[in-house]
Image 1 (cartoon, rainbow, N blue to C red):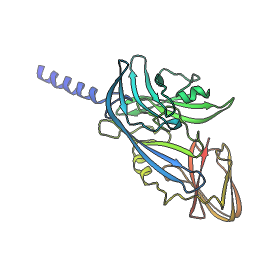
Image 2: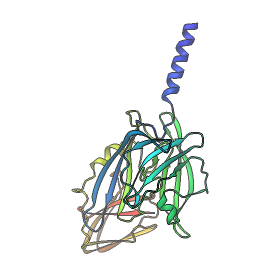
Image 3: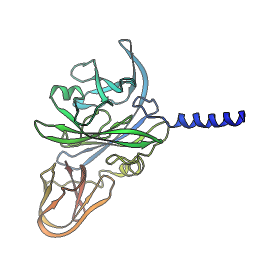
Image 4: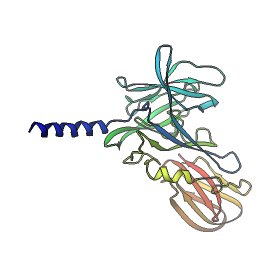
Length: 303
């Protein structure tokens, strides 16, 4: 009987060890990010991988350094510490023009619906506020992790969404908690795959475009050969949009297809006109790609 109890206890503690919450500063964490750039020419794609580098002590404070070297405003933010009692993650930022050598709250796991939050130094200077619009949860490694949905307050109205997963960070850009889709217009970032302890744990349910399964396989196949933008022939407006987009071209539009970031076709229609209007009010917030006449491809952001 004693031997049986020892086996049961061993199995219990083994399972408990495996079923633990992920922490942002886990040294085994690996984030894979896709940057999409469209500045009036071909759509360009840049892939980045972020990993732990070393332990660092600054002013007697212990930090974990990750290779998050390119940050908002052309600087860098690399040094992180996590307070599991206060339920906050802090980042120490460095910028190209001057050193802003102080801790800034990167993630606050105590926020409730309706609470406001100011993230990076940039956001503090320009008085951007983020409001918790909703809170959900997702199952990772058999443990529930909270998910915060933020919207940005832009002078009296809310726009630009950001989703923060406990232990993983902002999936629109993990280097800064709150850099939502479309905030810089021509630049958009997507953290499409995350691994911990050498595995890519499934997010169930998915958070926006991230399920950490199909997203890990689909995003790497996006490339500049597939995505070309001919701005002389195609105009899409308004972009970003909330309800409707208008597509106009100097040629005749015969087909329009809209794909999401997973490559799934969510809209397809035949036309015979130089201008078409499409109702996108029911689409989830995010970025979408448009294929016109089977070859021309552009993007738009649904807010």
